[in-house]
Length: 301
Image (cartoon, rainbow, N blue to C red):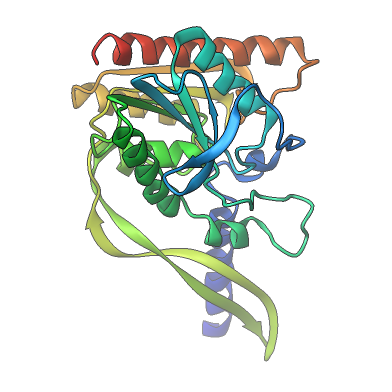
């Protein structure tokens, strides 16, 4: 009886671990992968803060926007189109860093799943790299910086929003952003544990599980922040976004939270050009992002 209870308990742990492996938004993070193109866009690729970055817009602008990509990286054509749009419509110098050092997630690589890839490309590393990019921009005379993050990049931008690194922030269908991130309550530091499930001396399942340990205090978000979310999102569901807004408003943080009907996680950057409805909704989100930067950032800088 005890043996059976132990097996059931292990199975529960495995299920929870597999959910963590998928990331907050699960398989939705992987849907509609783009055809990467290193030469797409009107801008150029240069080095900023030690990272390769797609840069577009006036290089002498004192106002810059950093775009943090989803798992498919800075060579995604739609992402570069968004950067070009932000640059041309508002005169920002827009920087899209290669946070993955030439190693974006490859859904065709069956030898390396999302869990393995995230182990090499955690958002904590992205946060540290983003700070280096910000330092480089300030060193060359940029006086104000905004940041927008898509999916994976949403977590990076959320972390930046806690430390006065930027004047304004936008999260677009963010992944791995939790209530603790918004509230600033005690949370846990991540480490990796290898777990093997054995039955009658046979290893029937082995998983790498993201577990939590070592309590530490998370900081509050301090930066004016907009959150643009999808109606259909396994990780950042509309109900969770409403809680985000309540907390931000209670903490007296300027915020704008909008749920886009009829769309799914990733829609702002992984839309198909021939899908009129998707393009219209994505353009609406891009305009909301731009308006947020202009009203909360340009006018206050």
